[in-house]
Amino acid sequence: MLTIFAVPKAFNGHIATIQRNAIYSWTRLRPVCEIILLGEDKGTAEISKKFGLRHIPDVQTNEYGTPLLNSIFTITQQAASNPFVCYINADIILLSDFLTAFQRITMKSFVMMGQRWNIDINEAIDFNQPD
Image 1 (cartoon, rainbow, N blue to C red):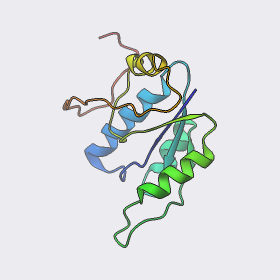
Image 2 (cartoon, rainbow, N blue to C red; image 1 turned 180 degrees about the horizontal axis):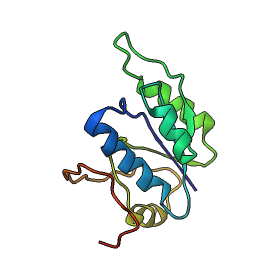
Image 3 (cartoon, rainbow, N blue to C red; image 1 turned 135 degrees about the vertical axis):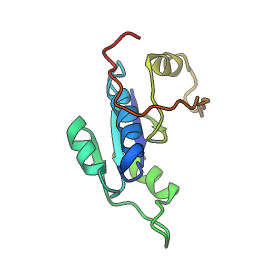
């Protein structure tokens, strides 16, 4: 169905909590999506292993170590097991309405965009709680 891919920042401090919450939310999507995390920043390999995700460490970077978009898109499109790929920032929480919107698209080729809401979250989210 869909391959979700991201290049997380280093898992340090508050950003670690934010990214863990977001990536965990992706694992709860149904139907299940393939998830690929790219890059070698601290914690990426560990979170991939923890959640049973694919990890591809080797991406081209610029002289400052910033991953190049063309590299991550090319790598992902070659590695993805699904015909559709979704690039997302590693701090975006996805809920079930994301796949509902995706499944409504009937075109063979498209770009889907969304709007984010900023919410201060300072702890792990218990996604099993209905509230």
